[in-house]
Image 1 (cartoon, rainbow, N blue to C red):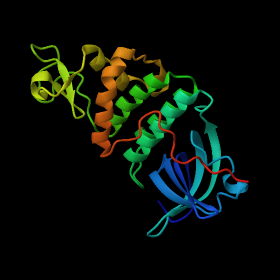
Image 2 (cartoon, helix red, strand yellow; image 1 turned 30 degrees about the vertical axis):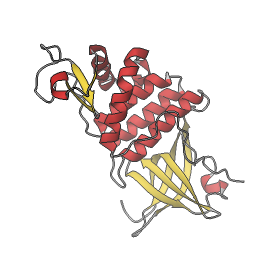
Image 3 (tube, rainbow, N blue to C red; image 1 turned 90 degrees about the horizontal axis):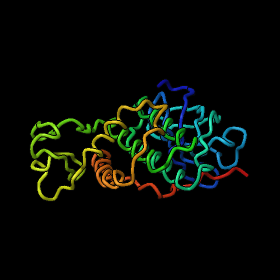
Image 4 (tube, rainbow, N blue to C red; image 1 turned 180 degrees about the vertical axis):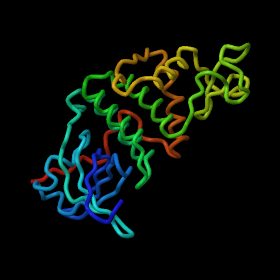
Length: 253
């Protein structure tokens, strides 16, 4: 990344007020991964930032790297809005979770095109009316794979025996999927349907994330497992779907 102003597609992950006029903006960018940038005067300038510093938007960001500190966000232009808020409160909550996981799972200055495209596709699906609960499970399963956390949908990673072999029913403990004998007595079972759903979620094309339906019973199995697995992969527990974004973007006067 050269020490000049460059343009990149980006998604706003977090906006934090700084002083009376400035903002610190965390962006997930297509070219550079996550960037933390200082937007000087952003709380007062419509010309450079008006309408762009908002969640659930794909933007064109003009960024400049810092020297031993924050880089600078020189300007921002909205490219596409995802109508997550208009889709309802549940969609907004699910979208908040997507952005939170992306923020925790991305690294400063480390490009990850797969993660960027997954977040963009997930927000687009929510804005187009995807069932928030189903989309959340699909996103969680997919983002685990993007973070390098393998989902064993064919065999137990502990003993190597395929699911369905004698006594080899799947179970999960502390975010890990094992067969019941390997997992031990504290494990919770995972049905064949739950494993199949994980496999289907992993195989979906990005443009079809909204097509997978997760029945309530399967959702009840997957929710505690995926929550624990995400905490293990991220090193911390993200806010659950239903938690609002911490900061609403300040509006220019």
